[in-house]
Image (cartoon, rainbow, N blue to C red; front, side, top):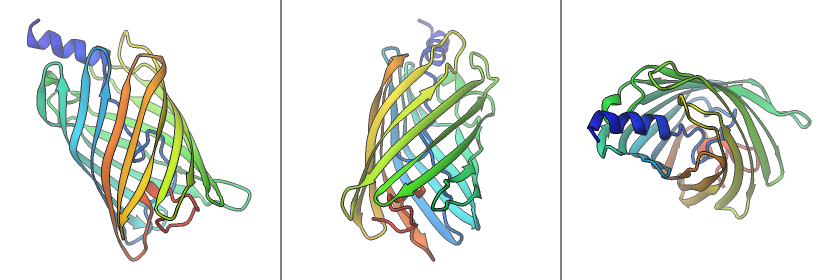
Length: 259
């Protein structure tokens, strides 16, 4: 088929999955501490029967800009097949603000709005073609070695072939050893494309501290209802600053210290 028709087929059958909190799709409300920084070098993939979309290598940077406020950016290289294109993907910018602190009885709650800049070439299947946004609210509660968090939000996307859509997820994780955290999530994504279907995922993954402030992040999962997808995440996480902080803000103990 002509290359433009292949791109249209790709967009309508396998819109790029937007990963949220590394390495999971569900995110948390805990921002990076003030005067603290995080960097991720990672790759994600989303494979369906019709197409495969990969981000990687991609770079994520988070900064604690103020108490309870995190600034966020992702600069990705992307690969889409069909049509077999590789190049700069859509750049992601966001901020996370925690407006309710966690107590012995109540969870912490925060918002994490994000903008996806149309920096990827949409004609080659590497980007959305127009600015779009994700507007989620997340909650988290910890107890001993256990942490659970989740929530949901809404995607606003008016690009050709795309449509607005809701999403929601929830995750449970446990600190297994001093260096290892494992977790599992259920994630729902309504149809993001005209003529598309929703997908419900079950994913499992975790974090392993390699040395000091350096950790390995990993996740793999698949859809159990709706459109068929196989998804994954693999990356390295490094943290520095005045306070140490677990990858993605999700230490199983609920503290800001890594395992």
